[in-house]
Image (tube, rainbow over all chains, first blue to last red; front, side):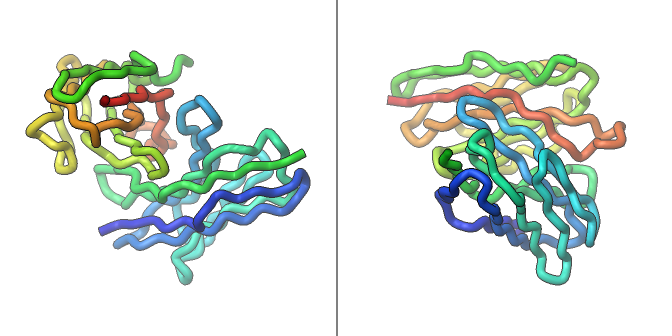
Length: 113
Length: 116
């Protein structure tokens, strides 16, 4: 079945550091890939997405590129802020009518001032 | 545009009691999902509705969990009787496959259930 593997957390960085959170997937066909973010006390919010190979999703300074050859969708940001502290989830939906999300286990990011 | 609404936000019950959660999706969204998020894990799909019909309930523990979406708008998820391992956050999400961003799911704030 489909699965998503994220790098183990928690991750602690200083403000303005470079961020990478690794994500790899296993799925049949051509899934759409997503990064969701969960701020403390809030629900999941879509951060960015990519729907086909080589697409780059970007939002709020975060980027991720859909790499079919390595089945990866790593999240990056050049300079993190304290306000980026949250839990980040990588997820996929398989092509087809169901569109159910399969999530990774999440990565807790803490950014220190 | 109003987001996905859920209530209650928190619930504490004892094992073997029953509990119900309510979800009102974004207006016009035909697809509604219920997910279970256990602490430290990613959300796991319980059930998916398209309008008022069930698309997939293969991961719903049907001996104790039930869900309905009678008028194709809001939905209720029930647990009866609850077990300790049901302690989790229950997330509702909605999407509209007819729109350009149809594969994007929008999540509510969740209901945190604690079973003692």
